Image (cartoon, rainbow, N blue to C red):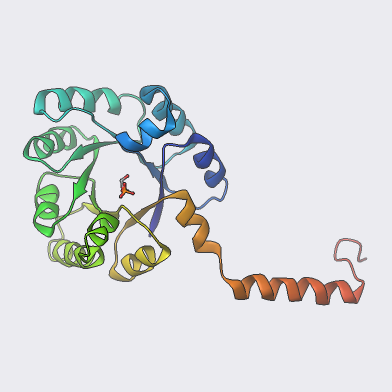
Length: 221
Ligand code: G3P
């Protein structure tokens, strides 16, 4: 499973990139607004740090303007994935850009029917929003299962399922069990993945017992 970090916070991206576990970045207009940064400059700086796909979302909603915005975003760097909303115009833009060899991440997906349309439009990634469905007491993970099952029936579908709107490590684990290709994860949830109280206790015990030996690996002959 590929791990993308779901943030526009450059400091968070720099720190998490050093883990060696980050395969890409996703942003969206709300995350960019939270950063307070110039959008084009910020995306350029992220692309200098991250080799994998960096998702940058169009702001318009009409075909003509989204297409122009998408081409401008794609020109920033070779690893840009242009994000477009799952609307009729958004999928028209997806088809046009993917036909030109530009990566496209179709976002705001909330149904399997939408995901099937995005695959037919040549999407590189489909972003079903698990957390926002859960927020409405619907089953976000069931959507992931449906999309993976449908895509697996058609070898010509190369669209990768990019699980988005992740709220917990459980969303990641369950999506991985279903075979989703990518999880885009908020920094806070990435850090939760490392944590287990038995790891902390076990390490403290190892350190304490080693100190009792009075030995040093580096000082040993
Ligand atoms: O960035 C796309 C998606 O992961 C955002 O979801 O629900 O955290 O705003 P949410």
